Amino acid sequence: MDDPLAPPGYLTARDTQRALGITAGALRNLVYRGQLTRAGGTDRHPWYAARDVAAIAAKRAARSAA
Image 1 (cartoon, rainbow, N blue to C red):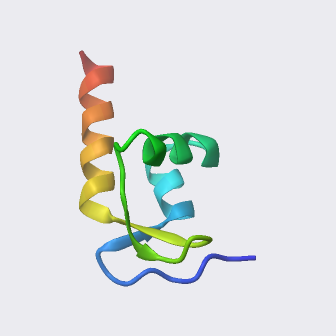
Image 2: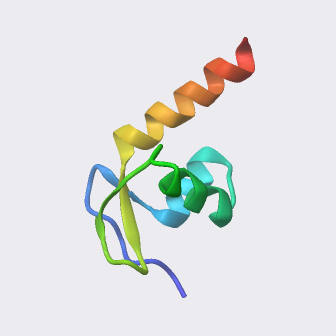
């Protein structure tokens, strides 16, 4: 079953996982630890702000380049 589409500027959980190259469990850990917050959607199909996901991706890229 596909996730419903997120509005412009937001990513679905599946899109966020693909963008960061992580599993669903790792995404739940990011949310649990407060590193990423839900920006909308439902409990079952949350959306995340694309700018927040991009910031995490940039932080990870900088860490791996160092």
